[in-house]
Image (cartoon, rainbow, N blue to C red; front, side, top):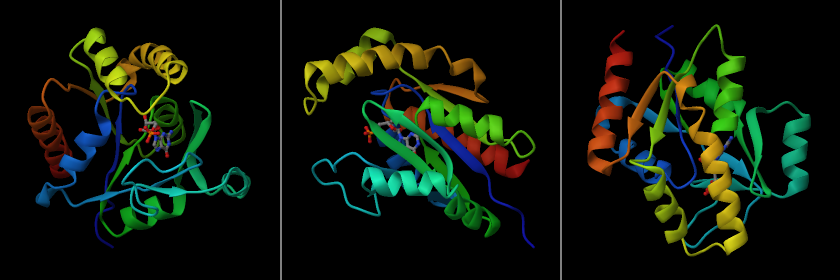
Length: 191
Ligand code: 5GP
């Protein structure tokens, strides 16, 4: 059997630009990356597609998946549930693919705790400053003030968890951040 693929966790506070970084890093042809599509109970945003951005499911279906033990990790985040399907991740890794999870910090901590014998490569994306993070969260005009406040509070708590990760990378500009992450993955692939 070939070498098992890496499990890579890309995490960081809400609004730090994880989604954009993930999309860009997926374009790097030599990293052998597969994106782990999560389950969520939230409604699709404009342009989001079922099975590509998320598997959009009902609360009942989500609970069923939790009950069946099918999720590697899951969390409640601002009124909705998000979770990573376990089988999909393990199957791809056994095929030698490097599987990328883009998840919030609570789920990332669950994976790190569960996988002590086979530790993931965990990367925390930091904003250039808290002020800048607030500006970015507010810039997403899709949400009402109450949700924004909730996300800011959450982001502050999330920033405190950065030290638990294998690597911390500042997202001062997307290109620079992506190339630093790509470099980290290449280095881990070689070791
Ligand atoms: P959004 O609703 O903006 O797509 O995502 C909200 C947050 O949930 C983001 O921080 C995103 O990274 C995170 N997230 C997406 N999928 C998962 C998942 O499967 N598990 C966990 N723990 N967080 C997730």
